[in-house]
Image 1 (spheres, rainbow over the protein chains, first blue to last red):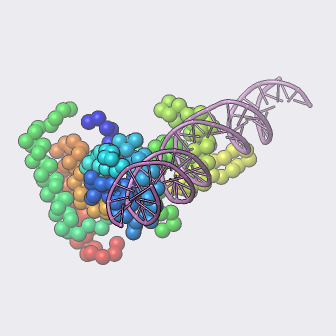
Image 2 (cartoon, rainbow over the protein chains, first blue to last red):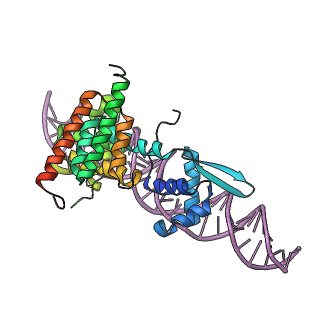
Image 3 (cartoon, helix red, strand yellow):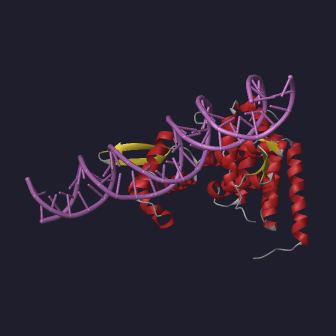
Length: 135
Length: 135
DNA sequence: GTTCTAAATCTACAGATGTAGAGATGTCAC
DNA sequence: GTGACATCTCTACATCTGTAGATTTAGAAC
C-alpha cells in the first residue's frame, strides 16, 4: 500500500485503458490505438504518458531508442481510487447512501438485482467466516 | 436536462457543502464556517465561489453591497455527477462491477448488509410495480 | 465629515492539464 | 553515406485550479 489510490482525469483514463490493453507498448501504438476515438497527435499522447510516468501511473523502460510503457497501477486500484473519491467527498464516507443513490439512479433488471443479491450473500458468508474485525 | 451533472474538485466540494448548510449566505460566513477545516482566507473562498457561480454550481444575488450565494445544484445532482464519472470512466458504464468493487473493498457489518439487502428488495418491488422500460 | 470596518473588487502567480508543432536522432535499405 | 522513415526530445501556450495580497468602497459610529 504505497501509492494512495489515484484519481484519473478523463484523458488519463483513456491512456491507461489503452496501456492495459496493449502493454508493454510504445507511445506510437497507444496513439494509433486511440486515434479513432480521441484524435490525439503523437505529441499529445506522448506528453500525457510521460506526465503519467512522473505521477506513478505508468512506468517506462527505455530500450535503445524505444520507450516501453506499462501500467503502474492495476485496473482495480484505479477503479478504487475513483470510488473512494466519490465516497469521501460526495457521501462523506457513508457507503449506504452511495449504494442507495446508485440503485435509485440506474435502471436495473431483475437479473441485475439477483446478481447484487448474491454479492451481498457472498459478503455475508465472508463476514461470518471472519467475525467482526474490530469495533 | 439542464446542467449535465457536475463533477467537483475537492475545494469545490468543501465550498458547496458549506453553502448547502448555510444558504442563503454571504462569502464571509462561508469563510468562517470553513476556517477551522480549510484555513482559507476570505479572498480564496471568494474566488472559488465566484468561479463556481461562473460554472453554474452556485448562484449569486447582489443586495446592496452584499452578495448572497445559494447552491445551484442539489446534493443529489452533485452526488450523481461524481458517481456518473466513476461509472463511466472506471467501469465503462457497467454498474455491477462497480457495486461489486465497492462491496469488496469496504468493511461492512452484518447490519450494513441487511440495509443493503432491503434497498435491493425495495428496488425489486419498484421494478415489479413498474415493469421494465421508462421510469 | 472623519474614522473605522466589513465586504467587495482587482490583480497575480504557481502548478496542473490539454494540446501540439518543430526539430533532432536513430535505423534500415540500398 | 544518403535517404526515408520511425521515434523521440524540447518547447510552447491556453485554460483551469489553488491560493491570496492589495486596494477600494459602502455603511456605522462618533
